Structure formats: C-alpha cells, structure tokens
Image 1 (tube, rainbow, N blue to C red):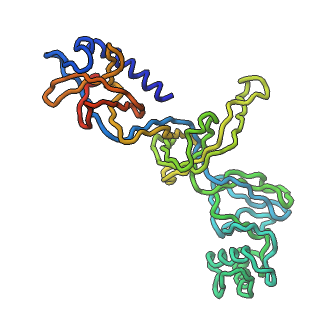
Image 2 (image 1 turned 120 degrees about the horizontal axis):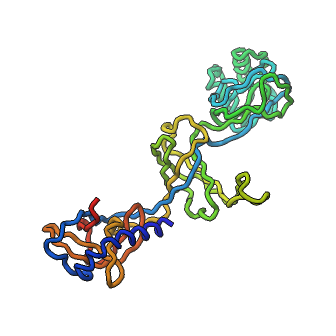
Image 3 (image 1 turned 180 degrees about the vertical axis):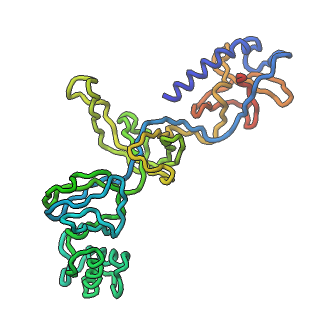
Length: 358
C-alpha cells in the first residue's frame, strides 16, 4: 500500500515538472542556459526501508489471576496499580497475611519436616534466605530442622503462628514481583477456597497489537519495531510473539447484523527496549511502525526528484558541481521512507539531483 501511495506521489510531482523536461528534450539533453538553478538533493547509497504503522496498546505482560487458598472473610486487598514484591502480603483473609514468595512451583502441599524432597522445598528455602531468615539454612530440596526454624522466624515476623510448616493459606508462589490490575472481590466478602481475588500482571512493559490476519506477514518474531508513545516520544521494540490463531473481533454496537464479527486478527506482542520511558499508563494507545520491506545497498533519491519523461518512463535531473544540468533516464525500484530506488549506468553516490524548491 505504501508503495502505491509513493508511486502516486511521484506521478503528481513529476506532472508539474513535465514542462521543464519537455523544454529540455528527452533524457541525456542539457537544460537551456539561463534556466533557474533548482533545489538539489543527494543521490545516496544504502538500505531503503519501507514501513507500515499499526495501532497498538501499551500494557503489562503476563496477566493472571490470584485465587483464595482458604475460606474466610477478606480483610485486606491491595489497590489497583500496587506493585507487590517478595515478602509483602498479596491479600489478607481473617486478618492473616498471604505472602508472596518467588518460585515457579505452586504450593500444592503443606511443607514440613518429613515431606519428600522436591523443588518446592528448594524455592521456599531460597525465598527464606532472600528475606533474611536463612541463618544456618542450606538451600537444597530437603526440608530440614534448619528449614523449620527459618520458617518459624519468618512466621513470627509476619504475625503467624510459629508452626514451622507452610501451606497455601500463608504463601503464594509467583515467578517475580507483580502489579495489581484489579480486584475480583471486595473487603468484607465471605469467600471459599479457589475464589478469584486479584488480577495481576508482571511489571514488564509490553505493547499488544491486534493485527489484521491479512497483514500477518508484516510481523516476524524477532523483528525490530519503533513504538510511538502517547506523549509523542518513541522507544525501540522487538516482536516477541506472533499468534497463529486468528480471532474474530466483536462488531461495534449497531455496526451490523447480530453474530457478524469484525475482521479476524492475530495477537502480536512487542517487548520494549526501554520500558522506563513509558510511565505507568496502562492500556494506553500507541503507534507501532513495522518494517515491511528492505532493499540493501541501493542508490536512492527523494521521490520528488523523479521526472516523467515525454518518451515514457522516468528520469532525474543531474546538477553538476559547476551548475550544468542534464536529464538522465532511470529505472525505479523499491519505495520507502519518502525515497525511491533508482537504477542507471550514469548514476553514482554523491551526485546532486534537482528537486522542487520548497
């Protein structure tokens, strides 16, 4: 689409230049003496990149839910936007803290002396040490007497009964710190085990794009992109995933017959090179610029340098250092970034070509 627009722009521009070309004759003829010197641009050699821009949403990665591990009354929930780190309470039920510890294995059993060795024991010991309760503790897969003593010290600091054992009513394991996006219950609610309480995400900033399925070829995993933020600034990004399943969008209310969705889209996620510059805005609109084509090591000029030759095809007006001017025929290649690839034996990098005066 961009190539069609660029080509159309070239035709419009050169239509205005056609009179000058007609006066000078065909390609290879010099411009008449006394003609006004044109503005010039340089013929450059390098990569010519074509791009397209799509709408995206600035958000956070890894959305997931946190459910209650035991029945009771909700006595505390964090506010949306709060960041919960290891050792802090995710929520409280019956005024008992449920603390976040870092780990990838869910706390599916009660950990105490005598349990079978396992990775859940190892991650508990690692967390206890990180929280300053690791005196005499060896981090391994075995729940030892030293582990039980470290648990009791941790329980005492958190106002819990010093039992030396840990279950899911005391600890929730998640891979890293989380950001609270919303509550699924309210303080004062009576809840049962398994009741959703919180929606959380990681604290890593990402951009999500619902890309039209017909444009899926534009997004390649690992490709670099540029993201324009709501404040007008830009940050680099890299595509981390491209969905393989097209989803039908819901139609806007009143936009068509019931049951007919919009155009199918695929999910595209983008990791930002500098998430610190994005602020804390969630669900903010952004513009993502993707590379759609690249021609390497070619000669190019601004699109407006093209002239429509009366014998057909295109040319450019070469302006020599002494001011002499001549029109040479060229073949055009790729378009991108307001420039066009030109091909011709009489061309070289560094030459000056005429362009319309601004």
